[in-house]
Amino acid sequence: MNKRPNPPAAALDEIDRALLAALVEDARASVSELARIVGLSAPSTSERLRRLEAQGVIGGYTVRIDPRALGYTLQAIVRVKPLPGQLHLVEDVIRRIPEFIECDKVTGDDCFIARIWLHSIEQLDEILNKVTERAETSTAIVKSTPVPRRLPPLG
Image 1 (cartoon, helix red, strand yellow):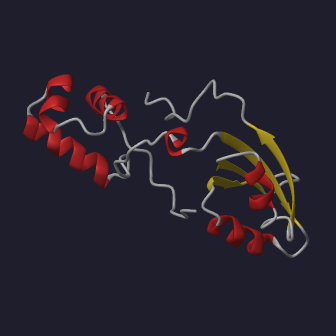
Image 2 (tube, rainbow, N blue to C red):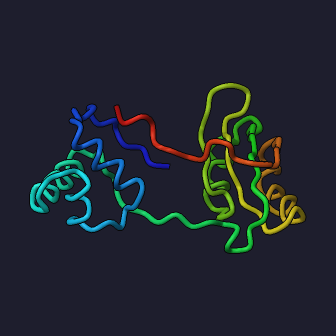
């Protein structure tokens, strides 16, 4: 998990927001294509991109891969409640299991809420057994994702 201090909120104008929206749609778009979309020259667009990167608004460029194309057929959400004195050990175990694709440390009875991808339901026990020596778990299989991961509003 990344532990960076929160940067101060950057002031974004309409062109910045349009540029970010275009990058969200296609992070591989060329600078000239982005410039056409936002109505600026390519050098001005490049400068805006550099500024947004320097301000920490753009933290990187990535690719989205559909796990189903790699044979992962099931997604599960796992709530994890470490046994007394096991919090940091559980966190380390979760980090080392590659099927855990995301994990949040949260308030409440459960300390972690995580997502995992599975090739089959049989794989679930195999993965959770690595955690249940040190924690209680509660699992829900994801049926659908009506709201996929997205950015907060840019406005």
